[in-house]
Length: 355
Image 1 (cartoon, rainbow, N blue to C red):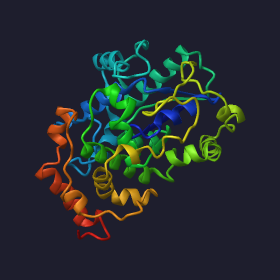
Image 2 (cartoon, one colour):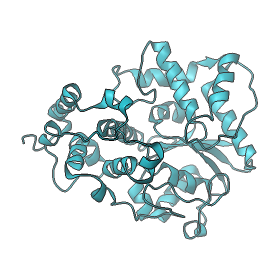
Image 3 (tube, rainbow, N blue to C red):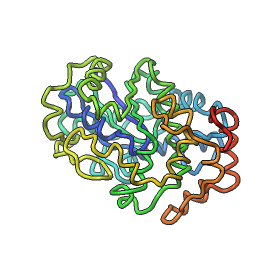
Image 4 (cartoon, rainbow, N blue to C red):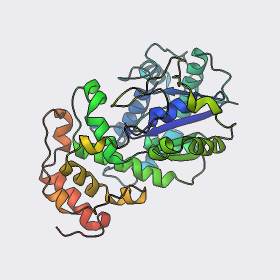
């Protein structure tokens, strides 16, 4: 029986690099973001059935209900989709912006069927489409899907979650090629909260069954050791020796050019790891560090200069070029600033809390 894999993490955290390395292993087929719309649509269905309305179905971790993660995991295991729902989900699955399977269509399925049956069918069909039926484990990478991990791991899907220094993540998201691709910038607070959600999921998943957690910085600094650990976790042969010394290929078999905001890459490359230092203003970096202090420390990203409360209380964001629809929710006005300051004062910002 073919095993199932899933790679996720915050956008710009190295999910594509990890997915590409995986799919270059002869025993694995891991596609680049083929069905992102499926995860958005399914989460939206869950929210609508709870009577909740959210700007982002794939949330930022600031949900109003503390039992939402458990409720969503239980819903994923028990909810079945009727024939009309299946047709809609399948027809929309590969339509997400920037997806990696725009020309793909899956065969119909008998109803009723649950999420995991649908997901398995889609990934198996995609592996067949690219003549990778020989792969012992198949799956995909999809960003921002951390809320799916508890239910997935409990269903025997091996999940890999990658995290990266939030300053590097935000610099990559708001500058360079990625900024040019999306056409505008994200509010800093939105990116900070999405990163905190991912960081907390990383810490929660570390050491649990069917989960492998990776730091981007470790992957690019020590790829041999990190990939050996991944191979062991997946119970597969070691990654081929030549993998790190040859150009990589994407899941279609075409030459891979990387997904960096700051230049092409044909393999593992740590060259852009410190680019955030020239892309973020000092005030932006200090704001990120203060808002993400606890998670950064827990993940080994503690800044040399301890964060201070004033980095939140007196920060003013330059919102030129920021997407208006997101800014309506994530502008650093009095309400959002108070939320972040209350979080600091409650202990998320231990240490020198006074200006």
